[in-house]
Length: 177
Image 1 (cartoon, rainbow, N blue to C red):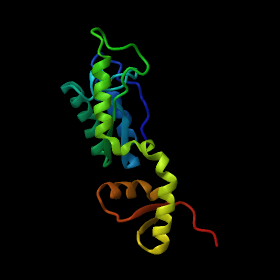
Image 2 (spheres, one colour):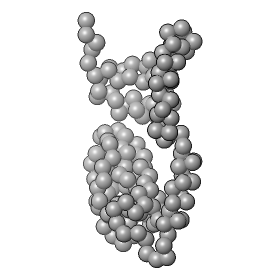
Image 3 (tube, rainbow, N blue to C red):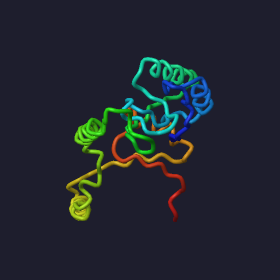
Image 4 (tube, helix red, strand yellow):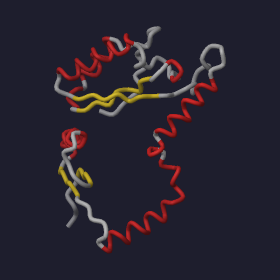
C-alpha cells in the first residue's frame, strides 16, 4: 500500500495512536505497507499532525502499529521525513535555521546517490553510451518477468528480500501479436 499523509497524530508528542494501528491493520491485505511520512526529529517536524519517530513514546506507538500489521501477515516500512519548516512557523527561539540547514546539507551529502538531478546534464551521454554497449553485447542483463498486477505485492516483497536478479517487470497485459 502506498503512503498517504494521515494527519492523525494530533497529540502533543506526535505519537502514533490506536487509530493508526487499526488503520494499517485494516489494510494489511496489501502485503506490503509503506507508512505515512514520519518525522525524524523535532527540528525535522513540518507537517501538521504527522507522527514522529524520535522519542521512546513514538517508538512504542509504532511498535503497536507494526505488531498489528505483522499479526495480519504483512510487512511494513517507515517513510522517514525531514520536512523542516515547510508549512509552519520555525521552531521556537533561539533561531535554529542554521542548525536545520546544516542537517539538510549533511543529509544531502550522505544521500547524494538519490539526488538524480545532479547528473541530469549527463543523461543524453549516458543513453548514447549505454545503448551502444547494449547493442554491442558489452553489457548483459536479465529480465525477471511476472504476469499479472495482482502478483506485484508478492514480487515487491521478493525483491526486497533479494529474491530476483536483473530487471523486474510486472506485465499487466499480454504483449500484442
